[in-house]
Length: 282
Image (cartoon, rainbow, N blue to C red; front, side):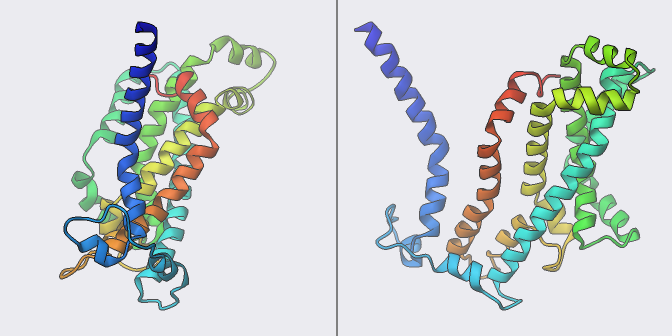
């Protein structure tokens, strides 16, 4: 009896955790497909009486430049561009800095490393005014390039912290052997360390993309037109001063969640490997 009870309790606990995690996403999907009458009725209709795809049709077919559907599509493109640019810039700078922290010896290395981490811990509201004026001076306000530059300022410390821990987990003897064979420091990083660090690179890049994809405060302050608005801002605009379009908000939430979920699903092998082999150490 005890042999049967233990696996049963394990499965019940796993099922309870799965329901706890997936329930909000299930309700998001159900709400996006429910008619407005069901969304506003009391008591709530947990199962829609009929499926309503009109919100998705509006988002994908609206050609009016001032419509919410057109703004959402532009925001989807803007979010993709900003996430790609900020991740690319953060990874390029952060990998070199992480290599220096992991392999080179210089005075104040520990303190400087903690200082980078401290900048990541600063609340965004403390820096938003300074960032706003800096982008204004650079004529990058209300552009995807400016937003990517802002995002890279807080994603880069994150990349440094994760990748330096991962580089330290790779035996130094492997790099020393390449240096003996004539490689330079940069050549050893590109030809030896980075191929060995692919799981960590993928894991860090995915988390960086998610940070940029979900960011709301800077995007709200720094953008004002459809040329640079990102998805969190576009979804928030479904809520007006006198009404809230819950259906469009939930439909936008479903569409905004699809790209990160697909990326994580396709690259889950690298994510698991990166987490298990040291990408989050330190």
